Length: 350
Image 1 (cartoon, rainbow, N blue to C red):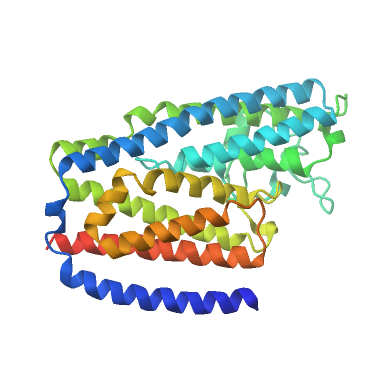
Image 2 (tube, one colour; image 1 turned 135 degrees about the vertical axis):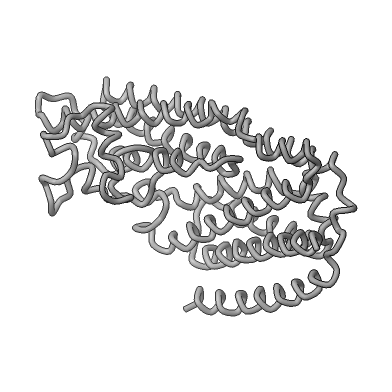
């Protein structure tokens, strides 16, 4: 009841404040782009590219380290090697979420291959009530790169055989004895599955981020044509869409059975990694922060305060009910504020 009460009160405040601000912006938004020169927009694009490329490089390095830990575990499935594998999965996943936070092209297919969630774990391996379920137990399915790819999302998006969360289930959801070196056919197939899915994940991440350097053409082409408003609209539209995704993820953490990373219990960490990137892209002293101020000083100040409060919440390692309620409302507020910037841009076009 505490969470519901907080949600209702703050949502009413946000909606009322948002309506008032929108009314003001409708009357004052015209010609605001005249105060934003092309050099500042170019600097904004440069900053976004710098952040994306930096995290992309880190993701490639992190997945290589994780891949090595899986090889070490399969060679010697000890408790120590398993813990190292878990730690490096957590690191690689958060780094990937940071790297893919703001992409300049449609990466939906790449994201589905790399980070599809939620998953039906019984599609991949056995469950206590269904000991014969899953690819591992279906000996008619060969454990090869081709067949594992073919099985991914074969009839439903939650039928996942690729990516971080298939691996998360195998690493965090299965017993260490399930991977012991043995002649048992199912253990052999499970070990092969862990090995192949890890290799495919590394391939997919390397492929995705190999394209990063050429992924900013829509922004650059508009800069060449002096279409500053188009560049800003695209950027703020994508930031707004991403914050809406963070809001949806936060709502799922009420029950870790439905969280982004439910087997490892790291859904809060996932959000934290992405909020840090949002700060790197749009926080104080960034180029787009200056753009926000020129678009609307009040909304810009509100956005900075909300982002700061959101970062403060994620300074803690774990979330209680009140923190979850607050962060959900803060994401809602960030979404409204980015939406207000969109309205200013729309008004300035008339």
